[in-house]
Image (tube, rainbow, N blue to C red; front, side, top):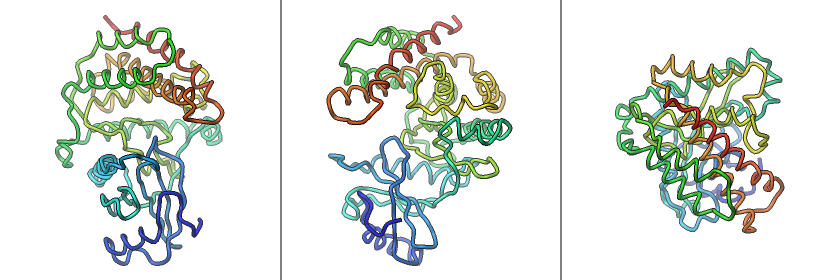
Length: 342
């Protein structure tokens, strides 16, 4: 860890803030580094030489560094502390942009591995891979079993009309990054709109639930669920469906999405869904709609990345491949929607 400030984090000002908010917590000069993770918000690990903490702030170069994201993330993590959902303890939330130039929050450092690749799981062997995948499903069931009102999150989102709003929102996102014809994408959007299912009881939804957004310890237990920037109250089957879509994407070659589900021992989609249904008691009969919608979302996200690349706003390798993955995702979405029980 360096004694220089990492980009976007003034360590001396952070230290002064922590001394004020949590006197005696920090025992020595802070060092820090940026770590990977999170769709857009920045994550740092800071240390005083004996203890470690994690700092989250919005990305650099935000025109308006709104506190919105930070407040929501901090709020959901704090609310879930003490439930069956493993989350880091929170230390402080700072909405004053004067301290480091943006709102931020500080939480405890949790040890664990975010498994990102098939190779990492293959090295553990099929039994451990199975145990980790089962724990991932069970933790999602635990999250969806939390009563939002009981943990102070009754107003964390608007579950009424959730799916309709989601479909509309992602269509708007697609329209803002259209630079080419994508075969079947409008058909997929129309099909989703037409076949909108009735949502079951609302739950706290993570929004980007997958293996590389959780930490796993040496005993294959999940120690923390991270990256809550998309969380809200809504239809919990959207979380399950995203996990399924990430696993089913092995049907197309797409290196940008984690391929953990290809590791020997990883349960099949049917097994994952059956375990979730049995443990949660939720009706999953319309899951194909949700999976088709997850493919639509992934296609829109990748098209957005590709669009920024064509506009010259992003540089680096792999963007052509991202662009080439969009149509196959749309095709998977349309195929899945066709399998919907009439």
